[in-house]
Length: 392
Image 1: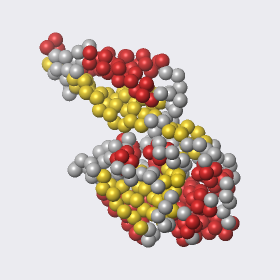
Image 2: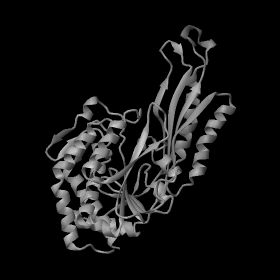
Image 3: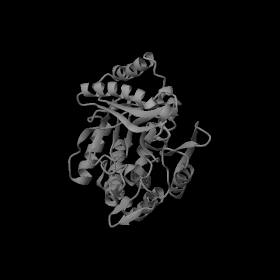
């Protein structure tokens, strides 16, 4: 792997360290801007905030409107540094899961730690990749390569109105030589991810008063019969995942026969498994229920196949060298326990890796946080990785 000149490395580190206060301020502003998904209806203020940050740093950008429901408009933002050509992408999402409390949108700083929804997953990663890009430009490292920044919505619900839509329209990866994703990886590199089939099943019945329950059709009881079959499938699985009932709702009151029961199925496949075959096993259970006379509807929340990138690719080596140089520890490459947007690049043969400042164990939780020093460190690693790629 090409080494970068010591002068360039020092310049990058100094530039990022000098921007520490600005990075902390932008992170706090992003956390204070709710982008909960669902419902995905309050994205616009965050889009404008990211655009303002790009303008303040004098970075060229483009807003790309994504066809989406009129009450929940979506947009992605692309920015570039360097002449058109083969591009290394820093790619991140600005949506967050619903907060446990509105207080999570009031960022709180305690020493080196910033608390708030999205601090770990993954607004600190957005800040790190943005200021890494600034340092690369100011150091002149992008004279030898092109860097792209992509800010997308809707990752938390599978990317239908985010990266999946952009990929389907040809906006992702067509000129890419690599991609870094600043997800909360807890200090390791994710070079592979599980596949995911996430479904919402609505079982239908007929409402009736509890005293006349024989006149109704209990949708909950019908759903239980389906769930029992899914649990039998769950027991057959070895190391992969099937979660039934992540969300469940039924009926309108305790004294009424429920005419609807809605529940979720989340099937996560390992890279070695045949995704289509595993998908069929789930769908066959639902089709069998229909054949038995159960009226049901199925909505796909997200669907994505497992993806993998070689750790000895040029980008894998550059990232590993930068991690070791910056942290003093060797890089560890692991399988992500969930789905990653690296798949939209890896599926096209582009090496793609996730590595970010956040901690997975606190992401989505009531006390989500990130270490500010870790955000600074990751920005240095991103900049060093890009500089290595450009020098090659």
